[in-house]
Length: 397
Image 1 (tube, rainbow, N blue to C red):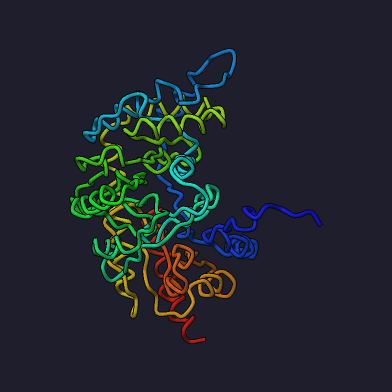
Image 2: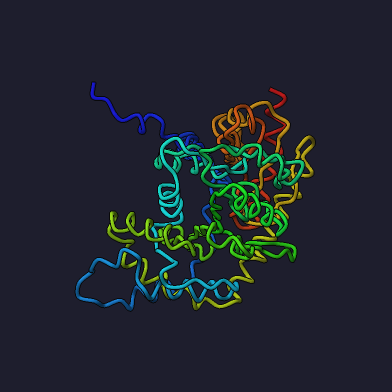
């Protein structure tokens, strides 16, 4: 038998998608599945994106610059200026989604065996990104009862080792919906300066902040500009997940020159998608206001339903479109599978994402699930009703 690489053996499978075959089998049996397991929005992509592609009439579909089309880079610069962030043209590189931005960032700052500290629970694919870069994710444990906010500065500092290269945060958080305060980010900046490490900010959900809360970027913290790496994407902001357009941004010139080496090695991001993405900077403010209001309504439906289920523990998420909740069950993965194989209400069931895969600490998240409130209101109400009945039935088996 031919052997594959050790890296291939170490590469983790997605915990979000491992239950997909059970969902497919349920659908074959005629069961309607409400998908609360994955962050694929149903919000309409702005027409500007498609119109720009329709208007593209070059006779040859050429390679783009490895850095990305300058028009797209300038559109990102214009976008960030609306957030009072000023990036120069050479401080932004276009990537194949936010995923490539994170992978490239890890490859640029660390060597095999180096570590990145990440608040857990965290986006499960961070494990895979780190594996590709030869690095390791080390958790900063946060708690549902505390809204998944950061622990003390002393605790975080105690986790730093000589081979710690960065602290990475998702803000607003996937999977928690937590929004970090400016004080928390200032604390991380102090740690980065004291220990000579980078701060990686996965800020793809910055538009999705609720209840009048204000978003603070790592770029808003003075004095740490050379430590900050921003990874971004149009996927969730404009509901354009399939376009695979993101960017990595930093004022650290040495870091950006290194990222360019990786960008040249994969030639370029897709030309057509960059054409469409360039037009998105002209998206009306009303689009974001309407989307934000829609997600806030959906958040309230899910949170209110969870709080009405006996034994559930969760705090109201203030951003993104996810919530992590402790359920009154022993094994969330077994429960999620059972919901697909053995349970339905009027021939419909709800699919959730077991949260254990969002933790690095063994044993944590075993009784938790992540819910993505990405369905329209009536579907969310139906899905949450089924979930409540499912929990009750599961515990009576």
